[in-house]
Image 1: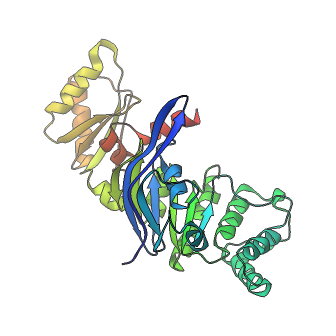
Image 2 (image 1 turned 30 degrees about the vertical axis):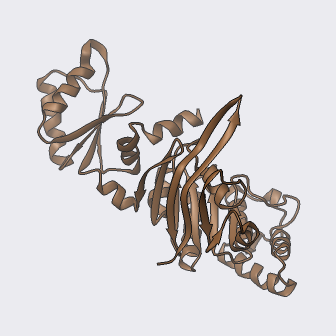
Image 3 (image 1 turned 135 degrees about the horizontal axis):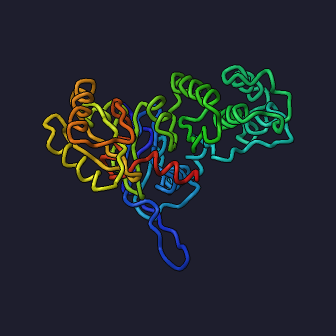
Length: 326
């Protein structure tokens, strides 16, 4: 399968308060044609910086990248003809209608008016924009604006669509609706590169995921492959630290032969991994009861991408999301 994106040892540094910050540190990956590729990581991990280098918006300090078979550094103008880019903020003119925005975008790419008009009709239907296409964009809901942003990114029929945090701020219904439209684009042959810090988004939408943290890649593969590396089920425990309770719990887990491994998250949760969760959970409860240990909470789940992130970094991505939101 042809690789539409190839990145090798990408590095990017910034000056901040007199110091040099290395935002991206030797990132390498490939993206085959026709897949939804997720770049997953917490805010500040280097996702958007990497995307901006691939889309020619930032110069590459070290390394090299090719997009649609073109070298990003030496053929930037040609790369821009082959890609679509939807930023976190969007790019529509709020005082123009959706149709006017799309017509202008198509014309800016040098297309003939009749060709652009036909393409606009196709996109209005494809992304369910037709019913409000004649309204000013300032009257659109969040979900409607994001679908228009995607349409603006593909009006010139690019090989690759870059989406930077495409569903930030959307409610669950609009988020799921946009996911379905992105899948439709993939099915029509568009390669989609999206950055996200939403675990559910990467899991549900992406064919393959690369997880980045502090400017370096810590894991890559399909969501199923990544979660398969976390053998068994996850038992999550919340315990207090009074009277050495946490140390007693950790000792009990270490002595339980059916517990494969235990990891502590940043918020103090203990994640232990077992082969058979439904059988292990009552056995753990019996052992805690016999040891007179009181738990604040205990839950059982299949491994998630957060478990993958926790296993690779020792931190929970959910905790970092919550911290950023706060």
